[in-house]
Amino acid sequence: MKSPILWFNQLGSPPNFHAFASRWMPWYFGTALLLLAIGVWGALFRVPADYQQGDSYRILFIHVPCAYMSLFVYATMAIQAAIALVWRIKLCEILAMACAPIGAAFTTITLATGSIWGRPMWGTWWDWDPRLTSELVLLFLYIGVIALDASIEDRRRGARVAGFLAMIGLINLPIIHYSVYWWNSLHQGQTIRLLGPSKMDSRMIWPLIATIAAMQLWFFGSLLSRARTMLLEREAGKAWASGIACSDGTRASQ
Amino acid sequence: MNTPTLPRAAGAMLARDLRLAWRRRGDTLQPLLFAVLVVAMFPLALGSERARLAMLAPGAIWVAALLASLQGLDALFRSDAEDGSLEQQLLAPVPLSLLLACRMLAHWLTGSLPLILIAPVLAQLLFLPNYLLAPLLLSLLVGTPLLVLLGSTVAALTVGMRRSGMLLPLLALPLYVPVLVFGAGSVMAAAQGQDWLGAVLLLAAGLALAVVLAPLAAAAAIRIALP
Image (cartoon, rainbow over all chains, first blue to last red; front, side, top):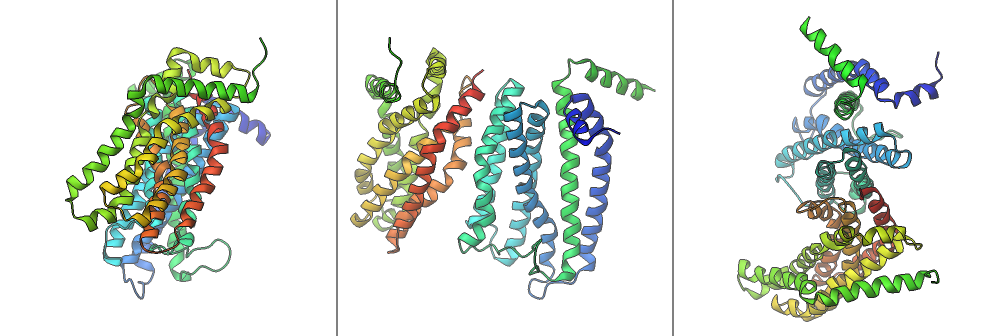
């Protein structure tokens, strides 16, 4: 039995990470899909309609997990970038850059579902409300990180420079989170709490927990899948990568 | 030869940048001309109705100042990187962040200060009421250094590229959003008779933070981004 610290250190080596990602990716995706199916089924058919909003509020079961993930993915990206800059771990650079498109997708879904919900509820697709604006800025930050990474040809330097930008943009996260308290915004305040009672009815919460867990697992699966591909691309010249490419080729031909 | 002290190195850096700006006076004044033209577009696009222009004036002047501050940002560190003087600054026995802070100060003095000086004229072009001139000038005075500090930190990230083109505004504008919101917001608040100093004080707090952190961040960014 290896010690956890040794196991963790060895995970940083590309072949070990490739094996780890290949083994766990299907489990993450599979569990995520299962939980998402349960959550969406519960959200659409099991929980009661809202006394005021009727059935329209059910979009929240997608909107809230994606909004939470848009922040979580950004924080993950910035932390990976900081680790990559301080300890110069190649794998962390790759993980940080793999976060960016996933986070951008979650942010886009958040903005889109919020907009679809806002049309019947607020009577407008968009409002220049602090939380909406700061979430839009978050999307621009993600796009900026992706663009900066893509515009530098040296892959390692590109990842490090874009990672530094991600760390600068980190100041936006508290602004998004506290915007509903600092300014009297149109967007409602926090209704779900980890500690203490939630302001949401307890019968409505369980599908939300399922979809949040599903999005979280989907993110980990997606991260492993993207990082694995980026790793193979970068290490294309190495023996272990060509070994994997050859073994995949023979398996496909059989 | 004696070793350079911090004040002497900073003074030499500042003098060099100001001298360079003076030698290329035409280029230095381009952002100013650009801002004047941007402001002049608003009456042409919106019609010359006085009341409406007066209402939009603070926002229009702030957007013009913001766009003008992006001009010249691209060349701020790149020209030094190309002729090798940035490498000498990296090797110098004084902290890189101090030298970069001097460069940012010179950039503000040559790029943004003329714009603030000409802002009363721009305000007249858009019929801004006289009592709003003080909030406008004060918010520009506190806000434009913040724009320069944020913008040069981002410019430091793109220093390794041959040309950044549209990338630099794409990266800098999201970071400019809070400055614009509070800067233009303070003048708007004054127009509605509300307390406008609060937003300016928030900008000033941001400026105090950025004066300390931005040169350090820019120095770190240059070390990462230089090939």
